[in-house]
Structure formats: structure tokens, C-alpha cells
Amino acid sequence: MSHHVYIVECSDGSLYTGYTTDVERRVAEHNAGTGAKYTRGRTPVELRHTETFESKGAALSREHEIKGLSRSRKEQLCE
Image (tube, rainbow, N blue to C red; front, top):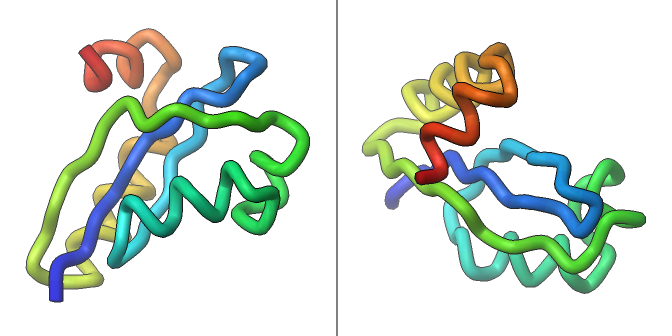
């Protein structure tokens, strides 16, 4: 099973970083309003970046690292 870290851009321009095992399903959940509480009022979201890992621990560590980055650094990842 693959583990993914992703960044979506919300309709208000903010960036949300999350973890999942199925990126397409998770983005669809965000857009349906059943994803993270943060994205519920900020739909639609657009997938901007993904990274894939073999272990959940590695993916969660990377998610934590990305969440600590500045907005400009996150934007660089999305390019």
C-alpha cells in the first residue's frame, strides 16, 4: 500500500496539506464537504502537489515537515 502526502489549494487561495492512501478519493471528499474541517468552507479544492512513500511513518513525518514550511516554500513545492 502506498502512502501519500498532498497539498491542495482551496478556493480562498489557502494551501492545505494532508495524508492519505488514496489521493483521488481524498480530494473528492474535500470537494464534497466531507474532508477536513478546514477545507469544508473553502471548496472547491485543487490538487497541487503529491509525494508517495512506502511507509505510513515516513509519509506522516513528511506531512509534519511540510506543514512547518512557509507559504512561499510550499508554493515552490507546488511548481
